[in-house]
Image (cartoon, rainbow, N blue to C red):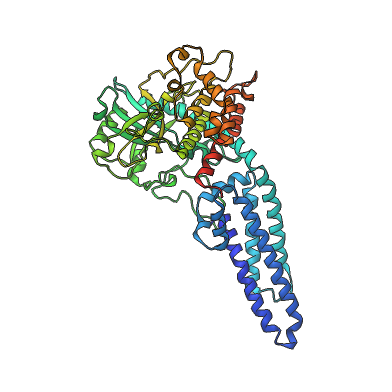
Length: 535
């Protein structure tokens, strides 16, 4: 039972105690001998009511801004309900409590013991000890939560800076591992899905790098040989995760350690398919697969094309860092051959779409795309998966039967090694070429047009035409007419903001942390507001 679930139990138990005290008070008032206790019982009931309101308020403070307020209200109304048991709250509280989740857990246990004591005695002994312990505990929690919640936004930026560095390390290493795993001559198209969930991984000071890496996974779609006709290509989706370190024994069930008595706040997510929301279990066959090295990934892709389902294909190793990764099937069952009739659609084609052959980006689609791409830039810059100057020709969607085209956003590469497209020439004397390119792309996304389509041939010959045009569209308020103030400000910071001052370098982790806080965060807030996540 998590500390947060215990808090819900306490919140729900106090009204029960108050009702019991009221019943005792009503009964005692009819007995002259016991009337002297009536006032104390009523006073105790009022004090408990006040403590419940204080606890309710601090729990609201912990959750507000992290989940919809309507959900918070429902949880307050139903403190014994299933929402209090959801794992998603563990990571929210770990991030918000930062260095003090264990302190929170300890105090909430003391409060629960005080509640249990009141329930067992109903305070008829006049000792007042349990009531005092309850009050002290909630007061301590108020102090703890108040300071931590105020610092939560700043801490999230710190957390994202560290997380971005680890994602870059993971993406570089997986690129090398995948490259080494192909033994064939022909190139394979490899699509790296840009998952917003990477931003949601909790990262607090107590976590080691290995703790965090074991929560991360990258999702790829790998094609059969790229020189095949598009219609004949077979695509295989795989999930790639770091293999658990040898000292961490892989069990054949989901219990990774003996259960401890009492409550626990939140443990690091175990690196198992089950822990990542999949329906796979670490049975003996799967554990054995993790010990098997893949000799040739090309054969695995072709074997899968013959519809032989495998939960885990085996392991591949980065020859540089010697880190090992397990390759898992994204699905938990075989698919029909028609499910693999996919087609890669570049963002270029979508931006020029009239809706006849390809769907048109809705406003909500543009906000989600802008958020995902900008977040990916902060995490994948200077890795083999992303060119230094990103353009609309580097972003792809996977078109597949029965799926929303804009659901999966990807960067594309070819393995074994194939050079990435260089992108448009960068603006002279501007240090942060990556942000310039991102700013141009954000303008194109919100206007749903490429810069090329908005200018004539002669204008295209002007040096750095796309940059000049994007700045003009920003200054002439065309961006403002289509976008929110936050989106416009994010574009402004990319194209002409403080990030272009001398000495600010996109290679620096602190700089990337600032980019997340000043640009990505604005676009995330826009997307969340549009989706109605924060009301």
